Image (cartoon, rainbow, N blue to C red; front, side, top):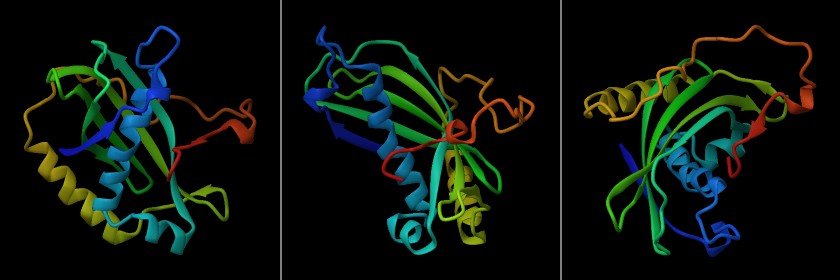
Amino acid sequence: SIVVVSKIDPAWRDYNGHLNYAAYAMAADPAVDAIYAAAGLDLTYRKRFDRSDYVVESRFIYLKEIRSDGSIEVRARLVGFDRKRTHIYCEIRDPGKNWLSAVAHIVSLHVDTALARSAEFENFALERFAAIKAGHDQLPPPDIFDDTVTLARRFPRSKSIPESQSSSPRGNG
């Protein structure tokens, strides 16, 4: 897996002093970016080709609160991909206590930002994704894995969703 450790920003705390639910997504985002960078889809690629990746589905399961003010650790692994999408699984941990705090499934769509349309990954990225996934497949299976998150289409296309709301940017991507 790819491991990213981030310093907990005090702004990530809510009015109760708890790590806000959105903080887990903020911590997971650099780990997802690291998998894309390992596939050659780094910031240079994104700027040169006007490409990015939008999260189209995310599922977080919260298990145990991170109480420390120090850092948050994300262990990300590529569990699936196709010509336009990735499915990345993240374990979010409190490194000071070494406990599993949350898990996340993040499905992202590759997008040509100039056209505002989905785009296929370049062949070099598909080859690298295959190598990354082969390595991640050798890891022990996760203790908690929601197999309802998948790249298979589960919903029919809907005309009722306004185009401006049909996908949301991943953030830094």
